[in-house]
Length: 397
Image (cartoon, rainbow, N blue to C red; front, side, top):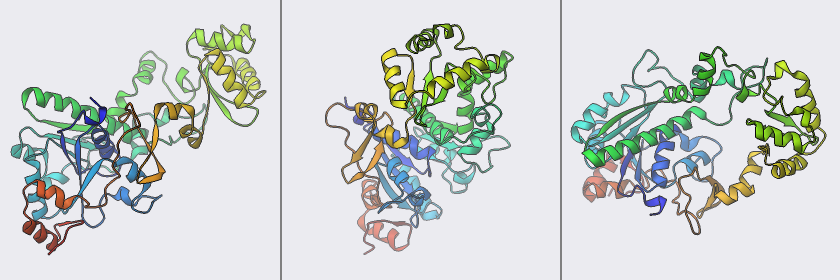
């Protein structure tokens, strides 16, 4: 069975916006789920308009919402809410990302919708979860990373915290949501029972702090640059090269550090690779000087030949054009947008010529199609358009 058909038959109504929820449903859509993105008629998901933008949508929206359909429906109005409840009857999954209480104010909360469809999997994706004193607070990826100790560990000793260029919390939340939806799907197939899921991005990040917590509990609190994985040792660090590029040395295990020491003809270094830099600053300075004596290309060749976990630090443009990316089909061009690279994310790897991908939908592109599937007549659809309850590619008559 191809990966793109693994979830054939799963029907998802996605009311989430921006990145975490849509990333979760992207992973489901890539594996064959029928994901219908439910958007407000006037502007749709705000991510559509986030720069940089192409001819139709923002590039990030295009990447995150491929393989989905779009239904433009005003769920803030009673008529739209009633229509959405009709769609829930035959849905398997609902995903939403509003602040706690918002869906309840529209009569679209888990308690209401699971009464309509007891087998429904209802997934809420938020920053701080559905309960607690911070549940109603605004937040973005940077805030969630800041509050869970992640940012405090990013950067060099004695320097301010760094800002990751990857949305760690947003993507972690989306990944956790897709994982738990799949677990709930298996449970539903076995029992017929639905599940209500409360996905909190801070919860996920706390779980990702296992290594840092293990150090803290052993009496070694983690901060910037003071531990093995944070640039605190010579054998696991970044080094500037002669051509002002950088190499990543990840020789954690003694065997890899010993291979590196042999490759550079420094056998006297073998016992010192994981010694904290603060305890052996001379070794750190020696290794820095050695790396500055050769170019990145030379060091890349040494790393490949020695097999010692030594790799170049690539720019994004270099990374997507690398042999690794090509071998893994990590990025690809969609037929209708040949100039736009789309990240695979691990859900689309297939044998043969490559994955079949549908472009991210225009706002309301599938409104009429989806409502007709739900049993709405052409007359009813036309009336809903005239009353501005729905929009998108339909004739109001």
